[in-house]
Image (cartoon, rainbow, N blue to C red; front, side, top):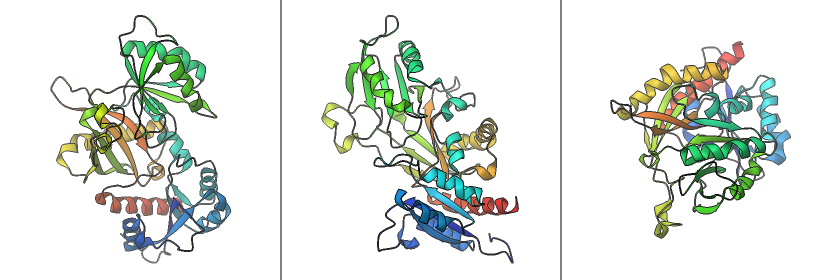
Length: 360
């Protein structure tokens, strides 16, 4: 695919967080995004690295404004840094005609945990609730915990398991648990160990997740978690590959394994979009769930990220013994690594969307 005979060469930036003050400027072939640089170059696109840091916002803006588009890989939270300065920058350059993937407004629609609530009526949904305030959380979470015995709580914006908790009643509840009820909690952050504390102490620990526009999503625990997580990689509205991983998050290791390699997640095994074991999920995504998500969230195809993924756990089997799938989260901000099969679809999606944006 070319950008069109006689068309000016497109310029697309690949942006990630790093050290822009280093004397050694990034060489595309030596970066983790080398395959994407190569795929864009093969399509006649001039792709350039953009190294971002909060203290060089103005310089990055000047680098982005002459570009036709920018692909962004920056996590919501990294070593205490967030996107509070990056997102206004991306909105600004987008307002000047630079196509941004993923646009911060699209991230807010589909890349936060709240998407689990907004799309729970889609076939991938589950028993999921939203707490907008501390008061809602304290009033509504205890009876839900009593009903099911185990729940999973997730802060609205985060990555790497930060702010994701499994909460379990050691014994079936007799009535609604109160602040003194003992619970077992396990943080999904790598290296965490199970703790026992009162429900009141745990809920107080969660107060920080309501800071600013923060909120908490409450989701039913999926008993088939030990069977692993399926990551469905998307190039906009099309499936571009899969990853299957046996995860350890929210599963307490045996005491002898705590803090050892045995407690770490297994390797993510990558597969192309034609992998036979995932064809049922692929069909559901492309023909039902993604169109339904776009309608629900009001996102047109050209605004979908060039690369994103949806993480699924196995839900209960149907009476016929077929698998069902439950959405665990959607990752939009910094999807990496991804299957080799996803590189060309990612590049094609980016070029097509940039060209569409230039015609709009």
